[in-house]
Length: 509
Image 1 (cartoon, rainbow, N blue to C red):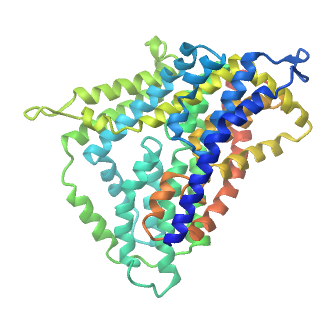
Image 2: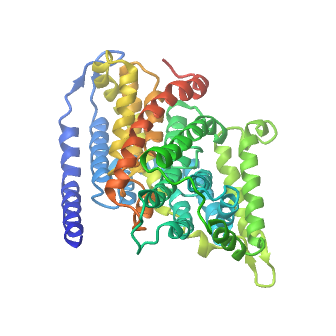
Image 3: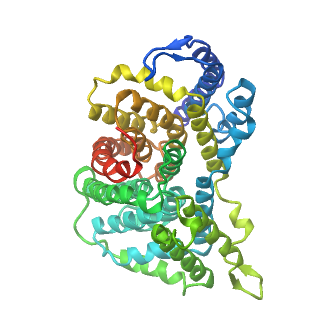
């Protein structure tokens, strides 16, 4: 095991070193290798400018470093601040502007809300209440873990959700399959495997449901706003993401508990008592929990009703109003007292600084790259090149995009992959003559559907670290779910995304 781990570590270091060197080299090769003009533009040949070449250098450099993780992906996101002004792709001010985009503050406010839930244990209480309602049959217990995991992942980091659910799951799993005792029946072992995978997969699937559920969602929503002027708010994304979650989550549960790792039908003795004891140990609701719950429910209510409040409050008229709402909620947590004598408030800065700042930087870098690609006409170049594939049936292209993203993110950051591919696919859609949403939304949704490898997503890594399953066991279930996800994402693009969002955008074709 140690040798294999060391071999893997050496391989990773070699890949990163290669990426570190290849990033600038490939960037220069692609940028300088562009011809003076490219045929296929709507108005005739496209003249390649110096700004276009500089943008291609930056785009290739960033893509290589992101995909190989040659340097931390959040550090790579800072490249536009240096390369854009130095290479002539844009000014520092233009490159830096996306780092203060409203979507970044949407996620910042969401992170603060989530941290408050974790600080006071509200997330754990919600999970235990849900688990107490599902019964003690193995399949029902797995459903009881998957449902709150998915729901919380719509609003809370999927990493934090999986980490919070894992100790509860291990406690229940130990009653069926103690880690130091070999099970007499495969179905006992299957319960632990299905439970671990159910938590990881539910965390990823739940993130599809809302605009703040997963960083790729926010990247696509803001790219659409910047590029096409179409504001996608909380409710608009919910109309697309929630149906997919409602369909995909039960399919995943059924496959895990009935087909891939079938579990016993008999109830698990002692499960109800152990979960009830864990719930009782929390004691009554604390003031911090009540304050956080009130702010959270108020935030969701305002998000849902925002489209109807725009006439009364102009600041809420477009999707940036979602950011205003959640930042107001985050600030409210800092001023709501939970213990006046001790001077304790629902949120403090010591807790707030635990938010994943790197994700916010990654947002800024991805949006800065996308804005530069659009501003310098590189999108037109990509569209012109993609026109050679115009004879390929669109559904084949959508399936290929979904498959590429889903399997690529098994080994790469889903956020970095989305930031890299969205502007490319949006430009390619023009050359292919298809609605851009058919390619860019499957990119965001597909980025949350990597189920095979422990390194694919943090929830996968968290449950794998429990020692209750192996990589082949994860791959066995994950491959089936990856294939199903390719189909579901494609169907959703045609049946939901374009009919619901595409028509409202006014974008052709």
